[in-house]
Length: 146
Image (cartoon, rainbow, N blue to C red):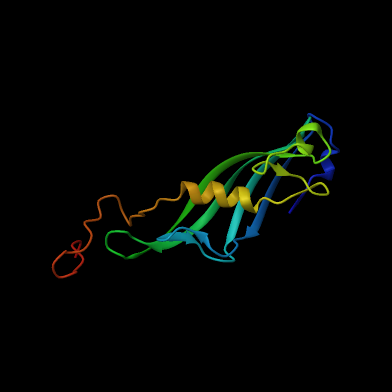
């Protein structure tokens, strides 16, 4: 949860934050993901606008998984950019906010749904250990790279 009280609900005010937060469970897709509890590095900019707080940022996450072709383990880091408006519940748009709009609750922002969407939608569904990975032999199952 991010506290936005320092922005004082004054449109035009902004704050920069750099945070490290632990990854929640099930933060990945079938073949690759962020290990639970691993550090997610966030570089954020919070901007007060008339109807809420605009959060723009980059999440740098460690990834672990296996190659979709040869099944070797892979580990890397991945960056995902995101931008989301969190509306004040007592503004005109906040009072009529759709279910897909995010609201501030007691001047607090829950970034987990935004991070989950930004990271999971950008992850490769078929990660590779290298671009030219030849995979496994279809007949005997031996790694073709060997």
